[in-house]
Structures are given as C-alpha cells and as structure tokens.
Image 1 (cartoon, helix red, strand yellow):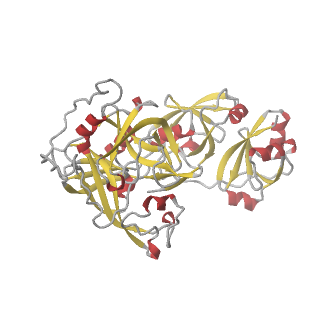
Image 2 (tube, rainbow, N blue to C red):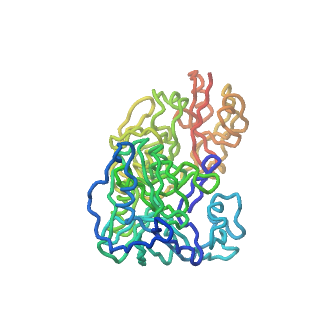
Image 3 (cartoon, helix red, strand yellow):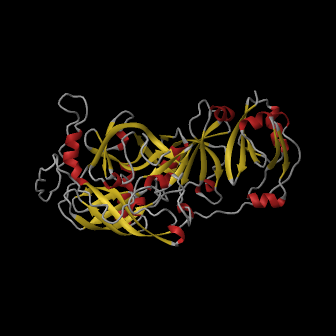
Length: 499
C-alpha cells in the first residue's frame, strides 16, 4: 500500500488490510436469517457467458442482485504473509505517525504493529486483498501491491475452499499481478470494455474490505482517464463505489455484469473511504496479464520526456488556440525523444492519431506501448505543426551528461527578474548547457511563481544563451512569456503575464 500526497489528502492503495492470527475466519457467505443453516454448496462449474439483465423488471437500475449471484463466486479473497525490508517508504524504524494516512488505515486492526518494524530491518507482515478468476483453469487477477514481498499467498474461494497460489508475475508500473491456483472448472467473471464506459454509468464493486469477503457496493463512474501522482501510466476510472483496505484487486463491474476495472486506490484524508476510488481499466490489466503469462513480466516503453498540462496563458504564449496537449518541459539525454529531436517547448497533441488533451494521456499511451514500437507524434513547435516518428525505448535507456556552456550578464527588465549567468561549476552541478540564475524576482515574474534560485533555461521555447535572449523576447511586447525554469532538479514551464 502506497500513500501519495494529492493536495491535502492522499491517494492510497487498498490492499493488505492487516489481519492477526485467526482474524481471517469470517465466512465468505453468511446465513440470511439467524439460526438458518447454510445450504450445501456444490463444487461450482464453469460460468456460461449468458448476459446478466441490464436493468431490473421496472427498468430503473441494473440487476445488482443478479450480478452478485452470478459472478460473486468468481471473486476471491487473497491472504498473504512474509517479511518486508524496512525502508524510507515505510517511514523507517520507530512508531507510526498517527497523522499518516497509511497508519490511519490500520489503527485498531488485529495484527498491525506499525510501519518500520520498531527498528527491525525485516518486518513480518500479514495482509488481505481481493482478486477475481479470469480462467476456469485457475488464473486470477489482483493488484501487484497485494502480493508485494509475499512469501505465501492463499486464495479463498466463495465456497470456502482454499488454495496455495503461485505468483506468475507482477507489474509495479500498472499495479497488476497474475496468480495461478491448481484447480479446474472454476467460476469466472465476464470481461467488458473499459473504453465504452462513460461518466455517470452505474458500477458495482465486490471484494473483501477489512477481510469481510463478498462485500458488494455500488456507485457511478465519476470521471475517466485520471492520472494520479506516481501512476502516470494508468488512466484510472474514478468512481464513488465504496471501497476500503482489502478491496484491492477486486473487480469493478458495469451494469451488465462485465468487469471493467480492478479496484486499486482511494483518495482519503482519514484512511477510509471518502467518496473517491480508482480502478485500473480492464484493458490495461489484460494487456499486462498477457505479457506476464507469456514471459513472466511486463515491459513498458519510454519516450524520455517530462511533460505538464497546458494552461490558457501557456497556450497563448506558444500561439496555440486551445490549452490542449502535453507540454514537454524536459528531454532526457540519450532517450528516444532526444534521438528523434524532441525538445522542451514542444507540445504533443497526438500519438498514432489518438488525441492528447492532458499530459497524463501521453504518459498512458507511451507507457502501455512496448519498447521498440513506433509512435507517430503530432507536435506544435515554433507556431507550426510537425510530424515526428519515434522508435520508443525501454525503461533502461542510458542518459548522457550534458556539457557546460556559455555565460552572459544582465537583467530581465520589466518582467521583474534580476539574473546572472551560471558559473562553469554551477552549470556542471545543474547538468545544463546554459542558463541564467534568478537572483531577485518582483512584479509579473513573482506573481507567476518564479523563485529566487530558479535557473532560467528557455523563453517561449528558445534556449537562453544569454540575457539578450530574454531582452529579445521582451522587445516583441508579448502579453505572456513561457519561461522554462529548473527548480530542484525538475524542469517546469511558468507562464508570466506581462499585460
């Protein structure tokens, strides 16, 4: 489970609801009335692909009862145990922070001993997640973070049978894992098409929150294509279906009973459900599953750029009619992007004919491709369109060190900047060929967010060779300037309104 800051809250993976000895002994199905004996459950056979009715008899809502009855048996509980190396991600040794969203998930749960292992380099853990059967021969999908570092993985079927599971492979980039159990004629889910899902569509989640197996919750799709911090490759489906720790890896069904996603994370300030949950689209999960089944691992392409969303002022400064596209703020030396001529200030608006409106869409389209694939990019550069064909690299592309460059003196005039050239040592430390160090900032630049210590690298896409580059841009009397600055080893564009 990975806490991530997002505004003042956190996006948190849902798996590994901690359990103590004996805490998993909750039945998968409970009697409908106290004192009524449970009916005997025959060994389930393969599920036929008959469609669950779209709506109930009154034509008002999906038949959730029918979906749970038909496909609930294909939803499984996943328990794991093992040891995990204490790390900075786990806050290191010591007591957990009560304000940490990760800790809030587990406070009061049996078996939770805090993060960091109280000083021990290896921390034992047990946890609970969910999954669903996609093959009658024992193939199961879940989240990678559910089985991370697990030495033992056990799958609990709805009919109370238990099987030791083998992890065929897991992919941390998409948070998808594939398990296999030694069983035949298992019930399976029916897979849908996440591309057909629209905001407002009804959805149903089934999983094991806090170990409470076969829990069903419903909601709607509240957004599509969400890009979350640290998960830029996955275009998440956002829903308001209630999911909690232990739901991780469980299926998200549409109103026809088809799985359209894998529940993975929630947005929370308290550690519990607060109305926003995120699911991995099923097409992404199936693409990863096919690679894992074939090779034991998944591979992802890399373009080698850092990108950011356009704003209206940035779009105006680049001469774009609308703030659509992914603005390239940095190109990694030696990457596929560098080899094919991409540069900071380029705005990528299409990949292989598919539109790119937000930067997260570019990350998803590239990351879900394979190394060696060809990508046709439509790029806005210098107030005109360019077509670039790029052969994508892999995650291990080398990076070359840039050489130091020239120097200059001066200030930025009415923009509100006092700058000086970087010394040779500063250029080397910043790993840039040229730039101007911001020594003081006032006026428009200060209002835009430029800070003392920033390194000015480019103006409106033109590299800053000297202060004259800045003066030349100002003499054109633009309404907005797009400054590319280096801050804390990250390149970002800052739009500065001058009028």
